[in-house]
Image: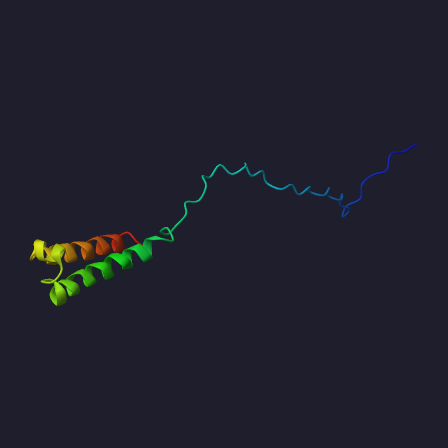
Length: 95
């Protein structure tokens, strides 16, 4: 039997390309870090601000009548500003 001859212009069909998903290795990323301050941070910070302000106001209004404030004298202003300073220090770390 004679062998068929190829004629010009005939093309051989191309085989299909198999589409494979690229391999992605399992994630080894660390757990995400929680962003922000603890829920108690802001109330404590505001509490220091208010407590320092109240300490100074009470000292100026009734400092001579209260034994603890009378004994401290002008150091009451330092205590009040110290409490406000602690509040300010906390505010720089608040997120």
